[in-house]
Length: 590
Image (cartoon, rainbow, N blue to C red; front, side):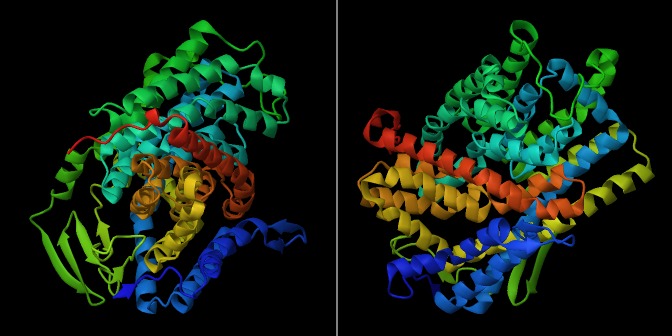
């Protein structure tokens, strides 16, 4: 049994610095390490696979040499993270990019572009409609990188530069994240902390809407700045950005409080915001001047949707409707349970590397060797009665969210009557596009699982608990750090949910506030985690070398935006703790 130690060198400050070292190495290599290309030009940041490898090696060194984690347990934890990345992230991104590639090869994407242009030719408003409104719907249905991948690819198809598309979608994919994939982060947070699920959703719904109203303005301001525009051009579209943000925020507040709707908050809020903004732009208001990309010398040369028959427009949008429908279906607990038991008659029982592999053909579970129930979290991170940490790799290939996206892609190909040659080309292009990102995602997720089971993440979390009365602010920073480490608000909630609860009790704070703030602060970390950035680069860049080297520039651009967002959430939590405590909902009695 490996019992985690949170002060291995006898000095709290030095132990914290050593625990943070792998993160520092990863950040330095991604964003700052100087290197010279073949042409002799110096750049900051090395390629993402090499940066991830440096972070992984340093994490192994700290975990095994300083925290005395057995090397077999460390290798098993890394393997668990890498395998989980294939099912939880790579499979989703592959299927999403396959769907996009199919629509491009079939020519239907041109009609989609035309219909978006008909709603508004103004590039500022296209950012809001695609990245914010449509991206929120995708986040609510599937999450885990899908909105960044698909909305980013759509924007590139509309003429936005790859770097622009990646950055704008990372910024837009923040406020909806707490209810992503049919509320998975909230469900996980309730399980980890032991608090009521609806109460946590309600608390998150009293924090994030305040930021949701701001995001469309923030999005437009960043885009206009990147295009060399002025503040006047940002303010010029305030009626539309206010409509998008206010409609989203109000519906997010409302849906998050309703027992029957709270897990569907993103889908409801995103759909409502999209419809309100489209109606507002078509029938109420439009900007006096049209803002175009810097390289566009004339009005956008795209056909308007009116040049197509309504049957053509419907057929072009059908793939995206199928995507939303399939993701929503795959996200429902009842359907997931049905798929997990679909092949239950075919039992599997074997041993792999000395550990049991059991289950059925639809749901295989592998108890990780040298790791499963052999790691014990210790006080104050966990209670003295806490069970050893489970470490199981679950291959639920039928019920995985990526399978829902893949089914939508297959149905799209059948609907568009792709030939065998077109199928081979689409699959081949998608696989080639994912070669380097798969390597990075596997390494980063392996690193995150290694830090979790070694206990170095808990050391960083405990450092935040020393904030005393200011802890509500640092609860948001802890959630932000958790998402940066793990690449997922769900994983961050599983990681720090119980720690937030225990710390609140020790400091005599309301645990509902601190636990929910872990999730709401965490959403701002989605902008800068290596996994999300790699997904954005994969979707937006065609050139493989550009994808690999885009991580550093994107990270440097998004870091201060991410930190500013987490700071705002922290200030909101601080205000709710001491100025407006009535905003914190009460836990149900019993």
